[in-house]
Length: 433
Image 1 (tube, rainbow, N blue to C red):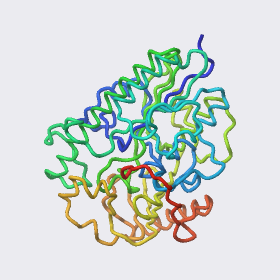
Image 2: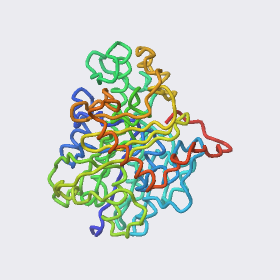
Image 3: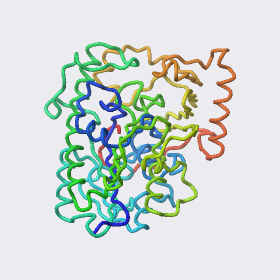
């Protein structure tokens, strides 16, 4: 018997950005996700709210910005959801969903506090192929979806650094694409070739997971979402508010029973939109504090319409205090750096990367307080126009939009330095996520 509500599976990985063949990265070995995208709805301009793991995932699972839900830094550094924050599994439970976590999460040191009915696996650092096997065991053992709709969150460790060759076979460095914000040399190419190898293994695992979900009970009535937390783990990407740090893959496969043809959407969407979308799907009353919008109409095959939109992006803590805020429209990005520092502070995993060995020290020069990028002519955000007299009016307008947002949302960055939380008593060892 088919449930009136569809099952929902949300697959998320680490540090991928949109580096998939279905997003134009032709040499990236991702055939399974290419096949998935060919039969799904692909969102071409999807964005995280933050460029690091915990804050980005917190927005995905609450529909609220990091400074609103409380997770302004990494979970293993003591950051926790604010009291009263309701998570997506808790909201979907109200609609009768059985909620399950399979594999990785990085919202709390204890996965049991996040509102899931079931937690399978370590909840912290499982590898992708391991999670694929776990998903198969879960499907074979409990037959989810047979008599109650399920919401399954399936988290993968990959493609976080490191990428040792014994775990991930690298590709030929000569075959990789080096983006314009990185130096094209042997160091970058060797690093990217290892990254490609990790993507290949993650892609294989996702292919297995999708086959498991589609072949399970009521698989024809299962909506599958694939995304990642934030941008790619390279300098001038991860841990920054440039698009390379916050642009993400977002691919949604509606239930085959719906008969929705595949398609692509070019408008701006945010991870903030996932919670309101699934709440609308489930028929649950939306909390008043959600900051995203439902995109269910587009998943059901609707058109973009004439919506114009602005997205707000933020970073507060990574491995150091680094408060940055930004507003992005279809054509413009404005960034405000709230404290002095290097032009490009590198998180520890990036400082220790192979790419870093070949990039010199120009990124250590002082950074400007304001940055302004005209995205239509400068999509890689390499030409800061904040001091250009011809852009003075635009800069003032974008700055005013950002300040208005910070005031409206009660962002603590406006009140001075944001204090760190008390560190956990027994923090579990974790990488610079």
